[in-house]
Length: 482
Image (cartoon, rainbow, N blue to C red; front, side, top):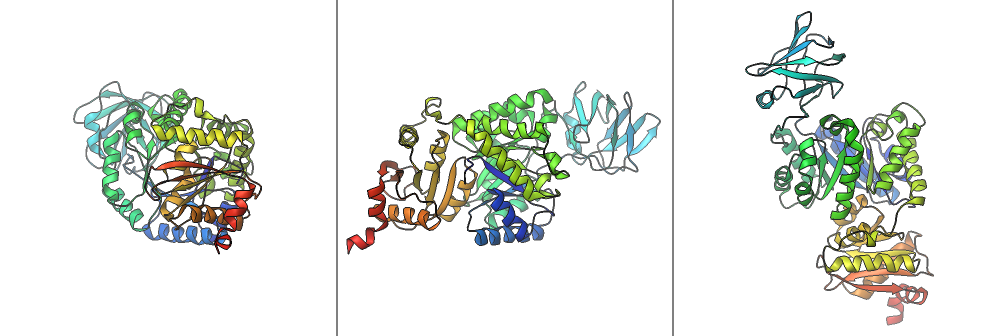
């Protein structure tokens, strides 16, 4: 409960059981990622059931993020792996073949999206094997020829990137549409959309959700997404800095500054941001993280990220629970020097932002034990989080879906669902819920925010200071009425 920055742990063969998921929750995981690049619907349904069982067993609310695989471009099948050397020539055909070696230094392959070859221009680069092999296009036309610029071994089905080419294809494939429908039917909380290029991609994803109120996360992993970031932010409920493919699509030395810029934009827009890829990668096989990895997590926290993500480390690693404990410890220690109180640094978007900034300043100046937020849509705790109070934000909602999604917001601790509509009873219920979970300090003070009329999204207009005597009054409210 001490850390403000949240942890998103990918589940896989090493971590998909109820027992391990409970251990991950107790170690500090707040969200779980289902990676739809792997596994069947049946496999993910069983993992989702295990998450919900673990949540019930631990009494801790967590969220589920479904990562949609998107149009991953890959080399076709090869007769055998290629040992590519500098100045070798590789030819890309526009029809499907089994790749082969034509001569000593000449190779022929196909890719699973051949239409992309029509968009490539001479002088542009094609990266093979997820960026480890670089080839420069030297001839276009019916066939694309590229010259290898560094040594590498290429095998079947490895990833291909076009870092200079605007590919402009539908990033939501037929498989993705079916996967999103599965997510809607199974009520996942977040959908991460891969290889986003512009706002149209996010609008398409929104259409596929229909009336379902799931949150859409735009994965920023293409150079054109970075160029179109402002319109993507407007069309999204959150961002993920997907540094794996991003580090291939843009010069590697630009990734840290892009990460900081994306986090800053997300903070300014009051949407959550996830920093992902290789954060504690060495812990996939080792007990301890490297010093560089520890610093990477710490710097993402200090940048202002809402969430840090684990991939292979928790999905297939030797000790997923240890990885989450390690990340949680890094976050907790780093937040001792965190830059809280950002109400002087951020622009007010509307009149409600003045209220949220005031709540932050009031809570911190009074050294309040918590900010109690009753929210219908989730907007109020997200907006308060934007100003980064030192004080914990305890969130309550009329809707279970809203409570779950708040697990991905910095500094927000989702507590429970509250159905009461009368203000005094709502305050009483919030305090009693905290007391039942051993989270209530009866001496206070607490800052409480409520909107009138109750249940109307975006109506937060009341701030109450709950002192020791008021806390006692509300805890005994029903008795005093008699």
